[in-house]
Amino acid sequence: MATAIFYASSTGNTEEIASKIIDKLGLENSYNITDNQEDVKEIANYDKVIIATSTWGDGDLQDDWDEAWDEFQKIDFSNKTVALVALGDQEGYDDTFVNSLGTMYEQVSKQGANVIGFTSTDGYEFEESTAVQDDKFVGLVIDEDNQDDLTDERIDNWSEQIKADIL
Picture (cartoon, helix red, strand yellow):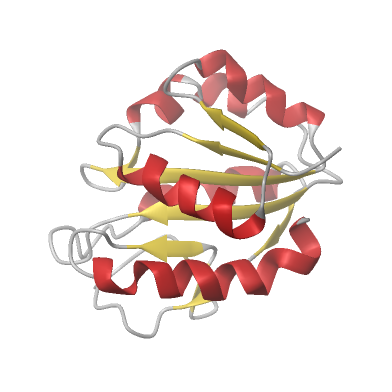
């Protein structure tokens, strides 16, 4: 089946980023689990998925992802290609920067996903993040609070990187 993007957004930033990714990749299937947390179950119907979340508090998942987490953990990600996206604030939360991305990565990896779209940590300033593996972020990282001027370029570069594997 075609690729789908799943996201949740409290303030609208993640929804805006998801919309840019949808446009860039020409995706036709998107699910905003903020509107319906049951939509997380739809992941099972796709072989290729993009999952986007923001990071709240001290590295926590966005509320809707947190509430859907029990269902999310039941999904079999084996034979699925997954690309991850997270938003965070590297200045305000430099010791838990985009830890929600690390949480998502750990779960989908444990469930057998082929995770693609790792990105460089160059250009970011933070102390710690569970989203870093082998000196790379495990997905696309966006900081709309401090580096919104780099968002479109980061989305463009990441989209080009994953296009062949995710579409």
